[in-house]
Amino acid sequence: MTEKQENVPLLDFADITVVKDGRLILDHISIRVEAEESIAIIGPNGSGKSSLIKVMTREYYPVAGVPDLRMNIMGEEMWNIFDLRKRLGIITTDLQYACIRDNTVLETVISGYFSSIGIYDDFFDVTIEMKAMAHEVLKFLGIHHLANQKMTKISSGEARKTLIARALVHDPKALVLDEPTNSLDMKSIDQFRKTVSAVAAAGKNIVLVTHDLSDIIPEIKRVVLIKDGKIFADGKKEDILTDENLTALFDIPVKVQKHGEYYAAFC
Ligand SMILES: Nc1ncnc2c1ncn2[C@@H]1O[C@H](COP(=O)(O)OP(=O)(O)OP(=O)(O)O)[C@@H](O)[C@H]1O
Image 1 (tube, helix red, strand yellow):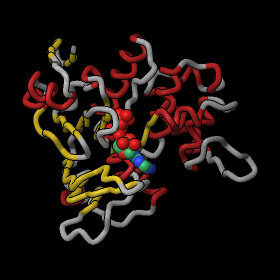
Image 2 (cartoon, helix red, strand yellow):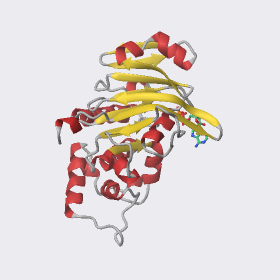
Image 3 (cartoon, rainbow, N blue to C red):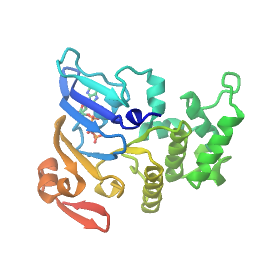
């Protein structure tokens, strides 16, 4: 890879406006995420966070004909959707529900190669290399002992890690996590955050959507606040996560506290 390719931003979006059912849900959003950068996107329910992720994954398209519109991902405007979704390892609660089937953890991880939910022996040619990579990723995430366990028999936290493994088999550039700790208990949340930290330390960009400030792992240095489909604030974590900003963002009095390298909010 040339130095130029290494330095291309993960995302370079300008003037993204999305309308659904006649409603403006993203309003002239511009955001650039550098090659080595990780960000957290925070905002109230319905503010447009998931919609912005869907623009990244090309599930939603912006209004065309806007003069400054740009939706560049890893240096490219045009993407084959399957390739794009492999380069952005996407983990959502919807995907987890879809993956809770009668497949084993190993099968679920391998299914990432085919962008499928299960493995269909008659159709998919699973190679030795694919299996070896799946085992390697499960070991990296500390869940190799679950390889032959059914998805229906593992905990939510283990299932969330399995989805990370499923995303990592492609060696993606980034992990895109939409409210990843929803419905996890405290121990699972703690383990999940350590897993995401390990993935960030291995050189992947993290794009995290959350309501919960304590999901913001230390490796994420930048926070983007979204309100009413617009970027409300964007900058260094310590400058953005203030009582004043969070109070204005959520329209209720919020107190932000810092505990070591983590943040928490109280209202
Ligand atoms: N396909 C769609 N059709 C109609 N309205 C939509 C569609 N997708 C999103 N919206 C609306 O756009 C707004 C933003 O939704 P979005 O899911 O992006 O918000 P969010 O910030 O992720 O919310 P939450 O925190 O509740 O998940 C909401 O009012 C939602 O109802």
